[in-house]
Length: 156
Image (cartoon, rainbow, N blue to C red; front, top):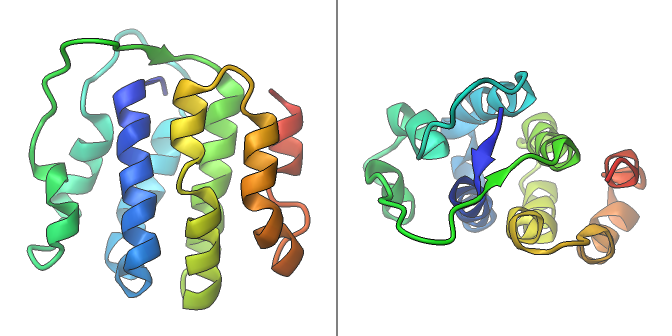
């Protein structure tokens, strides 16, 4: 289950890709389901670098140039950290599960991606992320789901 901070950066890039390409989500739905399964799995010994990229690769569409970064393994040289806070994984799985549920509504998917694209960065780099995340998802909550990430943020 554990990911490196660089995998969180990849999740940020992935959500940003979907924000800019909501119609393309359906091509990657199965890979998102695999990412959710991975993040929900119990922690295992060892960390596999480039986990997110490896999950996405089999689904990569050559027409998606903005996602071509999944084809290259990162060589990590500095500032590597393992994200062990389980609540962070609850937050991420909830974001992606929400995407899976509503992906056919492109306007809603856009707003969700717009509201949540920075969440992985905040979780990887900010000591107390709750306030920032609440602010980021405020409009999405008002318009679509008033309970989005409420319980997950309480678990931090």
